[in-house]
Each structure stands twice: as C-alpha cells, then as structure tokens.
Length: 364
Image (cartoon, rainbow, N blue to C red):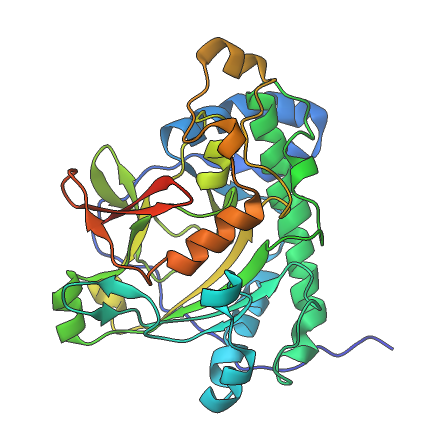
C-alpha cells in the first residue's frame, strides 16, 4: 500500500510585493545543465563571473516540484506552531557552548542593535544533514523522512553541482570542493527553518527596519528557497538592493569558508534582512535554508594547486599555519554572532569583532 504523508497545516504566503523596489538583477543558473560534464563545461564561466560580480545567483531546474516546495514550507512551520514553548526548551540548540545551531533558537537571542538593546524576533529550528543525529519533538518526527529527502536533494542536486562549477572555475579537478563536503560526514551542514516575526513600530524605529544586520555567512555555500515575502537585501556597489522572488527557485550565495578555500577568488556575500515591503506587512516571514559547510576536520587553507590562483595570486586572511579547521571556525563564529559587543570600524556603518584572529565585519 502507498504510504500516507503525515498531515500539517498549510502555509499560505501573501502574493509577491507590487511595490516599485530597487531590485538587483541576479543571474539565473540552470542546475539541470550542471548534471553532465558537457553542461558544466558550458555554464561554469557564467557561474564564475556571477559569483565574482554579485556573490548571489538564482538556481532553477533543481529537481524539486512546486508542490514539493509548498510541502517543505508547510513542514517548516511545524516546530513553531505545534510545539509548545515549554517543550521547545528541551530541544534548544546549545549555541554558546557547542557552537552550532542544531535544534531550536528562540526569539530575542541575538543583539540587533547594541545601543538600544534591541534583540531579534527570529525563531529558528535547525536539523543536521543527518536528520537522526539528535532527537526532535514528537510532532516533527513523522516528517523526518521527507526532511531527509529534502536534505539529500539540496546536497546532491544543488550544493555538489555548484561546488563542481566553482572547482572548474579555478581549473581544479571537479571533485576538489565536493570531496570536502561529504554527506552525513562529521559536520554541521544543516537545514534551517526560520520564522521572522513581525515587530513593533518601536523596534522598527530603533533598528531602522533592520531585522538581521548585514553579514556574511559562516560556511561555503548557502541555499535559500525563494519565497514571496520580501526582506532579503544584497550589498552591491555600496548600496542595498532587494532580492526578487522567483517561484520555485533557490538563491545561492558564497560564505566566508569559500573565500578561505578559494584564496580570496570568491568573496563572501554581504546581505541582510529588513522589514518586508509595505504591502506585505505585518506578515511573518518563513524561510527554508540549506547551509553547506565542509567536514569539521577540513583545514581552511587555499587550494593553492589551482592554476588560476597561481596566475592571479592568493589573498590570505591568515597564514596557512594558522588556518582554523571548519569545526573551529564555525564554533567560534556561532558562539559570538549576535552575542558579543561589536566595535565601531573606521568604515562608515560598519562594526567589527575578532574571531580566531580574523576581523569579521557587520554592516548597519
């Protein structure tokens, strides 16, 4: 007999905004072409140039149908709507001690504005790529087979193809980055469900409508499943530009770890989240992410054997001998993000912290 999918409430987002916003024109990558050597040879120059120019791209034809996409958004709201606040405490992520987000993160955990002591209004539930690595609330457990299938699709249909295209961009063997991102290895690559709750007028005024200040991601490749509620902005040529919703597309960006591994060839993308456009307020914003990270034991040194890096040179944020492992970098950045007091930089609108000897910038 066919299996019966567990039931959950439907998540129905509002229509895309009709406001005239300053959208960034991001390249669109056909991920179906990345499944063959011939296709990868055709599109890797486009991917190389896109990540060097924008740091963000759209991905389409990833193998997930619109119905499947709708279903994973339905599932993503389950931890926040079916589990009581008291029960969620039993599944809280040990962020400050363990240095990872596996489990539940409550609202008002991160500092958004130090001067006014304004905190975030974001709930997050993160699940390791190995979905059985830790316990989950009973109401979420029936959905784990679907979440596991979703993790595998992100890993093998999106993350690995993008990593192969980046390796080709550096004239490296196709599996150079893939070999550092094994599925179900000792690592913290994860699915994250994030619910951005609408805030009070007072909070919006204190933070100038910023819900998550400008930052770069910790890992190598981040995958955001596009959804209609606006708020994501990218720093481009010194200006914040909105990211447009494309139905059933993913938005892909590079993080700090890819900068380290590529010797500065691919820079991490500065982005932030702000209050949604006026015609989508006061809607809660539900996000589904896949945060790709190398295996914990990988040392974050440039792949200096790249012929491209031999020609253009390597930009180092630290000496190779001082390079942290992925585990050390992730742990240190996670423990500090939104929890430590930042220092004002000489750059206008920038605050800084030092993580494992590396300057990490935050943008207001």
